[in-house]
Image 1 (cartoon, one colour):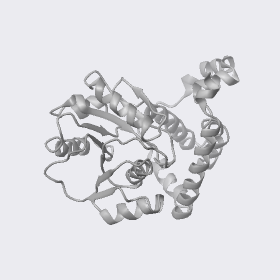
Image 2: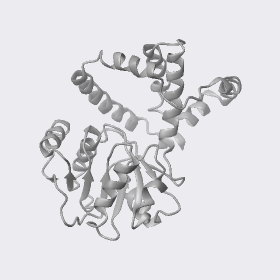
Image 3: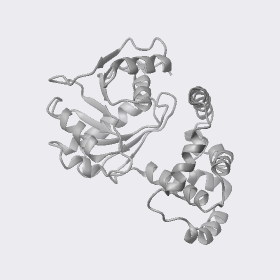
Image 4: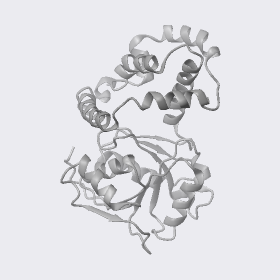
Length: 293
């Protein structure tokens, strides 16, 4: 993937954790200058070195807020907490230029709730990634009626031309990816809680059906390829029975902790990164845009 020659301005990335580090790795691989504001510079440096050896030449690490930040684009990754996100936005706004864009991850929080305390709500854009960011094409850009169209276009251009993302933009002000994932997870929890299936069975059912075709085609394209009539019949009978739970049952939390503890985390991570690289190649080989023509 290390091939981009476009000279876009440096990006500031604020956050921590493996998703944040893989976002930095993605930008570095594309030749972009990256400044990271992180609580632990050594942890960030080590993690990025593991993802992209010898790829840190254009990386600057900060652990304290400077008086000014010249970056036209700031990527923020925080926990899914409104106060935490607003706090970072509050730290950034006095330090960045008036026309700088703040692109922040938001799965369950509407964009309008992050804009409400901003001095310039038009520059706050939702930006969701998928781990590992340097090996996946996913990117969700979230805007609403307050978002400046020029900022959305700026982010769309960088997503495609610099970061090599197959991005999409929604104007509804909330994440559509999160809603689809939440619906799937809720039904999975319901099936396990009621003893209809084990966690192992759910994983196998998803991996060997949906997980098999989704790198090739999304839900609508798959229905188109398979025929929509059968789906209409199934949904008519099945939809009224689907779960409407609004919280994860305690029994599921305990069961998941048992289920997750079986795996060797380091080994699983190594396998996952290798798999992601191979899937990246497969998606490029069977490009959906070629199929859609």
